[in-house]
Length: 258
Length: 284
Image 1 (spheres, rainbow over the protein chains, first blue to last red):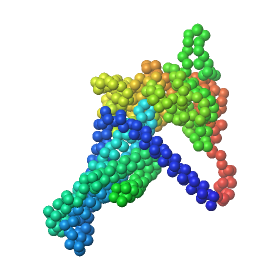
Image 2: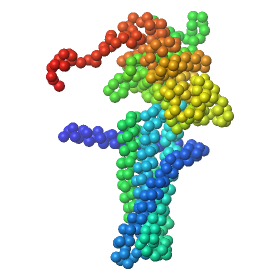
Image 3: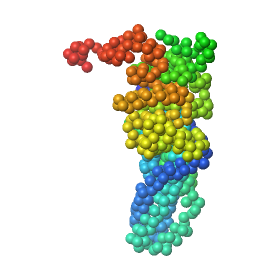
Image 4: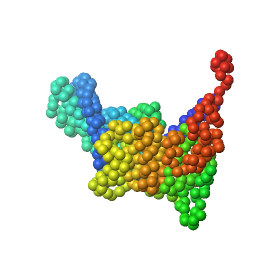
């Protein structure tokens, strides 16, 4: 019994210590943001690997999620003779929830894991130590540009996810199921609010981008510098990042729409 | 045996002032978890000389370099570099000091997303306002010094281990530092690469007036180029002096170490129960 309590206490202390280190790390990285402005090229380079290289999975997923939403929504709405509302249903589901949330989950899996592995391997091969010894702070030179790129990329990726989802929904609803095209678009235009729906979705995606990228870069920087350590850190990024997205989504939804 | 502290005396017999050591380590204590890595160690690194720090694997030689570079903090004792107490330096003064120090890591630690030229140019671009023409000239000069001017466009993955270390050496001297620390520079090298590196270390130290600290357990190579040698084991300095002093050491431990004898004060066998009992005892 005492052993169990001791283990529980040690685990709790370990988690608290890691959280503390994570926050100090964040503080130090954010301190490097002003120095990035005159060297924004470094952020652009990272935007390519974090954002552009994630486009394919985001675009394809968005398209299919929108198509499935339209199929499922039609089956429900047709019983009530409300198939003209299919466009609104698809758009609201994507903009408010699925764009930021599924986009965030995919972002954690694709870009987050890549960030962790890259930084973890740089640590394992002593590249970060070498930078420190060259009087170059790796938190500012390596982590900060990737962090900023992640925060910038996530809302754009979520927007692309939602836009392609709406297009996928349109193809299925209008092209396959025969929903009236005018009703599909006009109802969407009338019911989807710029601030209430779209802006709240954008805020969600910024928060998810911030948290997932924070977890990814911290896990990489804090990884045990061995192949096993980097592997574990990469797994942690996907698991913790995904759980953070889902948990924060509930909190943000309650605050925004509750 | 020469006491290194005699080299810290302020004046030679002729009355000429002698520089203080560039690095002074006093009563250094450093623990990792329950294990004591250094237990009251004193070391002086003389300016403009090549000092070798040798010892068996796992004695904390690399840790010592990290303590000198301020990447680790000692539990007790002092580490002074050029008169500055490294553990007490704040963020900015420490980074300013590091601009005057170079370090060659065991595997080179080249930035894998940059080619050879950009790796050597990296510290120049980070710390100077030089234009690209000037940077190009400086990089080519540094690469020429290590014999790799022709490899400027190669990526780190295309280099052999020896070439990677030479590129890292060119990068380490890019800012013309006062001191370079070498972490196991000869490990895993073929005879030609080894010969090249041994010669480079000595030549650069002399030509650039550098202070060099070589951490190594490659005894013959280190003794062939060092001005002064420390042998450390079990957290303490067990012997120090010139390479000749070391070769004539009366310590059987030092003799076993420098001659690479299989058995001696350091036994070949890890402590264990009786061999026959172990084989025929049938126990767990």
